[in-house]
Image (tube, rainbow, N blue to C red; front, top):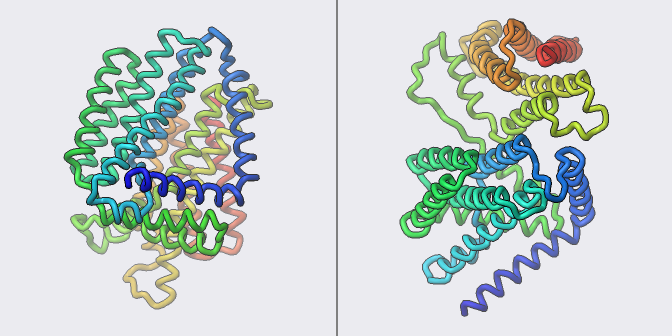
Length: 426
């Protein structure tokens, strides 16, 4: 029966994969060609890797940063379980010995995947040579990737205490990765062993939530394999409504003078993680363009003014999008007030009540930009002031429905971009 179960599971995966590939192969082929060309340009045109010539420590550091960021998203921000199976498999085999065997196979497959990815990265970074640097980087990356996979599994099923422990373990594992020493690899091995023992023998799985998520994934995968756009759109809408979560801050003391500020803080914390990730990536992309040589192989990117212009554009786009989200929250309150919701606040009070949180947020963003670009000149205060003015004007236009509001918003975003450009070019 064991072989029959495994064969049926593999047959179902193959059937779904072939159905999906039948409808999406042009897109998949285009993406494969694009990323292949991009990878070739990065390795041979930018990093200039040759046989026997390893990459410089700077590029190895970039690779480690990228690996740590990707795994941070996998563990803490992605709600999809790292070990997936058919919901029917979980339902019928959970209380049998076959479920443990399937889970062990998932662990083994994740280990093989980590080994393959680590081998490819380490082999390229070592100049396509089996040197001492290759073995150290390969061991550390393989241990780190597999450790993060197990941490993602624990975080998905864990409670708040386990979430905090996973965060500490992730920080420790990341530090060991950047040390790039043999003792660091030994520490990672010990961490990995303890995590595996805990996840296999002591951790209690959240079966109801796991089964519900697997059921959703099964329906979504079947819809994708059948090219059913209507069903995929409906599932996306249903899933979006489930993931809008955030703190309620019940212990926050609210009065008439602080109610609007507290509400703005709660709404800020409840912004979807996916949107925040995109905004953070835009800020990071601006830093990559301006302060690194990762994209210098592209035409005209060796010109500092062009790099500064594009870097400022990415930063200004991220900030403008954030202000649009925040001003939309004020607009929603005013719209509800127009529909009959009684609020003991005027439009002016609503506008001013929502200002403190964005002002503090803009100050924190200014500090982050100062750290990223190593620039704490007095211009950073001018940037902070322009950021606050841009948000205030967008909110004012949304509340009072100014006719020329779109033109004014475009102008303010342009001013913000100019100030950011001047800040980056110092």
